[in-house]
Image (tube, rainbow, N blue to C red):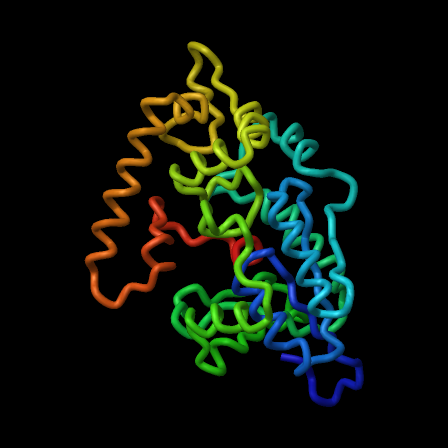
Length: 271
């Protein structure tokens, strides 16, 4: 925590992901913290819908969103340095180098309150985006008891609503995010076939060797995109939705957010 005797001013920074929670937090804090700095760590691999949504939010906030980028090397250069080893839930080098490091560089050594959109109904996700001691995490939604329905209300009342990708995807992040459900990969194929093709081109399978660099450990995008596999994925997804819809006290978003892997995404990417 900052030293009260220190006269150094404290900065207030909200790192946006292009998702519903960080956007709702920006709406909530706009008039409460006028000197808030809004930043977005841009991997240059985001969905077109994300960039469009951020432009709308910028108009609502009445101040610019600062786009932060990796110093010198983007995703493709970093991938080359790792000999094609794709990021994964176990090795999230993309988050470290393209999200966290640009954010920490922007903050520098200043004392900073970093505002994070974790809600009161998901405190199991509580964690720091950065471990630097001068960056102090703040959780306004947790402190004020804001739950999922409150986030939807804030977005609706602001006129922004949800990002367009929520029609087929459950969270923000790069178009090739390894946390995507298989039904979301199908959604990418159907909504952005060019981006699906680019994601597929990143994958490598070394013939008879054991080297297999794919976004999913269970199948390649080439395998996933076969018509019979797409039909199977859609049928499996529909069965899960029907099963979950029978469970009491589940919101529509909880039904939709049936993440196959059970993994929580990276906070700075997906809130």
